[in-house]
Image (cartoon, rainbow, N blue to C red; front, side, top):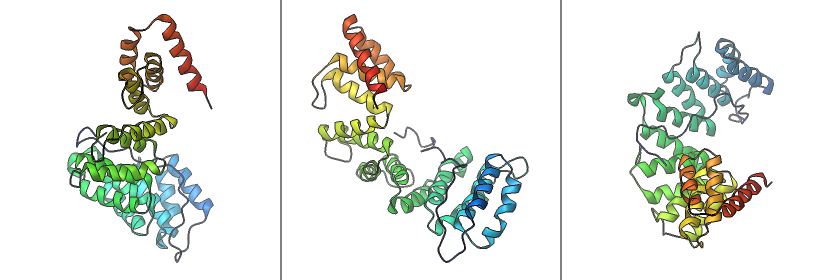
Length: 279
């Protein structure tokens, strides 16, 4: 969940990822090997070489080339310094051609604002996330749902947040599954439904989500969400969440362990190991 308006909504997607989506059909697309060479140059920090390789496809107006030029300016280097204004311009050109990755990375750049509050523009970020989400991108739907939760760039609305988070969750986005489950559990923006909340928490658990494991542990600890109280199962879920680095789960595991016998703790630990190693 978003905690403060100054916190980034999500990390910028990996600037070095290989994005091979084709550009507009009426324009010649650069050959795969050329794009791969550009990506290698960016990965090694040779922005000058990458920029030189992109000149021809940029003249042709290729969206994939525009995306890579945006990344060059967003990253910067020893010779070509980071330039967010240029990055936004190149992202915009690629995004207006319908390139989903460019829409998301442009929105991310508006959220981050080079880590300076005055350079952030949540309204623009929400608009570009919406363009990508309307086209079916689950990451954008998740981000837009978070913005509606906090009222960043859009009017605060738990109902709209739930709608976008559900779209992302149904598309397989693991953090969105956990976030939507929380709304169902708490009845924020949707009708409270413990059964559905538990179903989405379990779906998030299958993706390795630590918060979802924590909440299932809480449910077993107190007998909530239709589950019967079970200290052994609660300890197991806390253990799994703690293994993922959740400090709150570690604390609660120790608290419930104080009420258990050594045999119960051993059984819970064995169950956690079995589940952690299950295919």
